Length: 94
Image 1 (tube, rainbow, N blue to C red):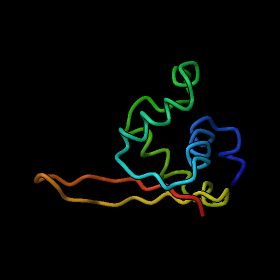
Image 2: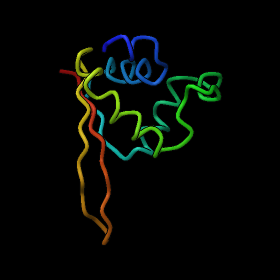
Image 3: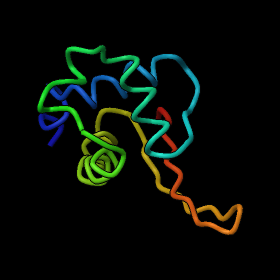
Image 4: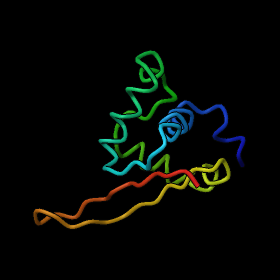
């Protein structure tokens, strides 16, 4: 199962984000922007990269247990604000 995220550019970018030391929290759109800054243009334009925030969220839900095996905890929270519900993603090192 860990094998599924070992050679994955998104998981690699998440690991790099976690190497910065503090937990990350925000929307899927915000996370996608943060990861794009880490991965670089060439990887972001590849077919292996999620094309939008919804695709990133689906990807994270599929690999959450694999990421946990590598020491990264991903959780999904629902928050209300401005009359709307938002899904917040929290990523932290174990």
